[in-house]
Length: 530
Image (tube, rainbow, N blue to C red):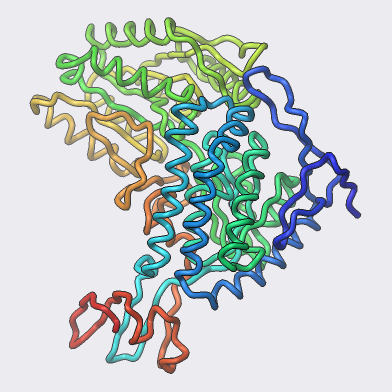
C-alpha cells in the first residue's frame, strides 16, 4: 500500500508519473551550503520495481517490432528537447552537485550528452553496430539484437553525460532496441527527474512504447540486487563505488545476468627523468590542471604518479605542492564524497604515505576538502600495494618514488586494473628504451594508454575505450564510451539457421539496404545486402 503524499516526487512507471510505493524518503544536499534541499524523493519498495519490470517486458516486445529509424528518431528528438531545456537542467544540476554552470555543465557536459544521443541514433539507424553476417552456402545468418529490459545506475559526478536516463549507457541501451529502467543517483534526483520528463515527452512524440523509459529514485540494497538478478532483466549498467557495484555484480552473476560496471581507478601516470629534465614546469602545470579539474571528481583523475628519485623529482614534487597549496579547493559533490575522501587520505597515511600538503578534516560550511598531495617510496608501495592503491576520489594524489626504472616497473606489475595509464617521456627519444619497458608492463593494466597527455576527460570517439581490467570495470572487453562499440554490451548475438527469408530480422533480409558480412566462395566480404 502506498504511503505517498503530494509533497513527494512521483516515479515514472509504464508511461505515467504516479505516486511511488514507499516507506522512506530522502533529500539531496546542496554541496555549496551542506544543507538538504527541501524536496522529498521516495525510496521505492519492490512493488515499484516489479511494476517497472512488467511494463519493460511489454515495451521490449513492442520495440522489437518497430523499425530502427523510429527508435533513432526518439533519440534525436530527445536530444533536441535536452538542448531546449538547457537552462532548467543546468540550474538543477548546479544546485544538487555544485558543478560549475559554465563551462562545465552548460558548455561541455550538456552538449556532449545530446551529441552522444545523436551518435547512438545514427548507429541505430544504420544497424552496422549489430554486425549482420551472412553465410550463404550454409544458409546461416546472424546479428546482434536487443537483449531486453536494461537497468541503469547512474553516478554522482556526471549528472548529464552518464546519467541513468540521459547518458552514454542510456543512449547505447536504447539504440540497441531495449527499454531502460533508470535508477537516479541520490546526489541529483531532481536533475534526473527533469531528464525523464523530456524523455517521456519525446516518447509520445515519436510513438515508442510508453515504458521505453522508466525512472525510480532509490531502492533498498536488497531490492537493487533483486532488480539486477530478476529473470525479466536483460542486462545492467552501473557506474559508482566499488563496494556497491560488486554487491550488484554478485547478485547478477549468481542469476547469470550480464552486468557492466565502472568501479574505481587511480589512473597511474609515469613521468620519466628525461621528461622532467626536458619540461618539468610544463608538466607541473598540466598535472595540476588535470588533478584539480572538477575538484578531482573524474573517474580518469590522475590519482597515482610514479617517478624515479633524484633532485629533479624532488623539485617537481615541491612545485606541485606549492600549486596545490596556493589553489583554492573546489566544491565536492556531496558530504559523502568529502567523508570518503578524508577517510581514504587517512588510510594512505596509516599505510606510510607522507603528507606534503593538505589532509585534515572536510570543511563544515560546504562540501570541500583541502587539495592534498602525498608521497611514498616504491619500497613502501611494494610492501602493501593493495593499501597504497586505495582510491582517494577527489582532489588528492599520491606520488610513488622509485630508486630506478626497474623498481618502477616492479611497482607497475603490482597495479590493479585501471581505466587509463600515462607515460610522460623525453620528446627527443632519449629514454625510448626505458619507455618500452614501462609500456610493456603498463599496457596490460589499463584500458587506454596515453603518451605525454594527462588522462582527464574521455573523448566521444568511435575509437575510445572507456573501460579496462578489474577493478576499473567488471569486464575488460567492453567500453562505456564510443559508438558503436558501447552498444554491444546491450545486445544478444542471435544466429538464424535455415530460417525462411520473410521471417528473418530486417537486417538480415536480402532486400535490406544495410551492409553485411557475406561468406561467398570461402571469402568474407562486406557488401550491401540488397
